[in-house]
Image (cartoon, rainbow, N blue to C red; front, side, top):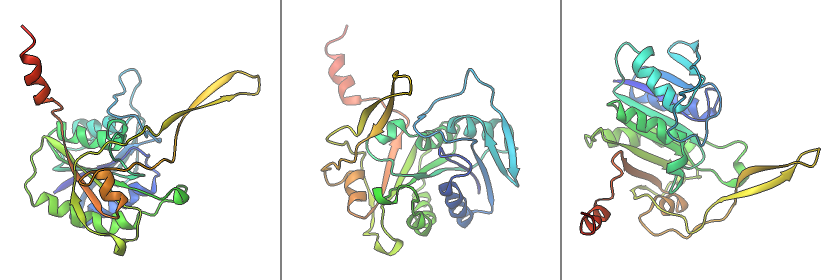
Length: 252
């Protein structure tokens, strides 16, 4: 089985090294193709107005000056002589739950793999705020290969992504593995941090609040908040069939 490994935190991220170790538990044919620099929050963007610079930094290891989506396309269309069977994206530095799915470059890299015909997984490691500067990936490393392998045994269709989130606990403290649905927070974590530069001119940062939602059981948020590994299947087809049926009765 040929595996393409990518991420959105960049080639030097500790989570990427963890994911490569996870991939090597599944296969010895592993290729790492990741962004040159941190691409967190770029979602499924393509580099259409800038050239893609490619650098080889080891055996079957490449850095692309572009987005996670660019990396996967380069892997399929240029670097590999045959397409990968499996795309693994991550291990992301921080959870990708609820609305995070829409912003995440990690999940977008996996989705691009699915678009191009591979089975695809996104893996993310949640962390407690106190450990933000040095997240612990031991939970993901201990359980990642096993969870991916068990999902592959289910003969997954290639029309989506499996989004796996590991809770911020030690490997032996995990309460279980739960198949979940995408949750929704009861407030937005994003806020505007307004500042002034040395000349008094305003500038702004998008910043995250540290509020905690009260999620419903069965959601990805609820599982991770309660120490479980969350496994959420996501589909490429985002059509809202129920609303489509409702609209059909009002349009002519």
